[in-house]
Amino acid sequence: MKRARSTGVDGAVKAMSDAANGPPSPPAHIRMRAGDEPFWFGIVRARAYDEWTECDLVVAAQLARTQADIEREQYALDNEGTTLENARGTKVANPHVAVLENLARREMALMRALRMSGSSVADPRDDKVRRRIQKEAEKIRKEMEEDELLAR
Image (tube, helix red, strand yellow):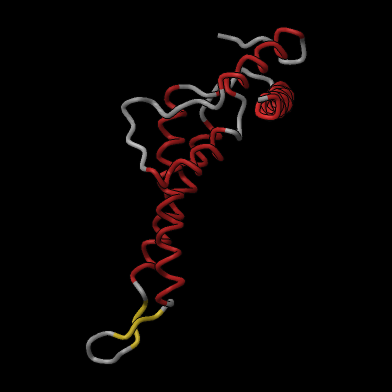
């Protein structure tokens, strides 16, 4: 199905509607941990709401979990250092280094998958406009929410 051009009134109305609904949620069958949420929101805000397919949201959830794992492993590595002393007193590479390398490869693969998936028939210029309109609509929604808090 071909999407409507985002430069018209219909595109602006759709962006406002999507912004009012907030960012997409992870699919119900995907398990998200509490620490994954900030990464999830960072990922899904990279595209306009209507650019996300169900399959993309699954990959986005996997990417959010991977990025949370990277932060957890990096925290451990920062606290322990890149080398450890084994039982014989020999310096060895911290296993967190290898785990981080594997997670970084997974992250890049998932990011490539997200860029390659989606609609291949869409005009990339429309995506840029759609994302700009969505960000403007989100800004307006936040301002309206703040005004409601001030009015109470």
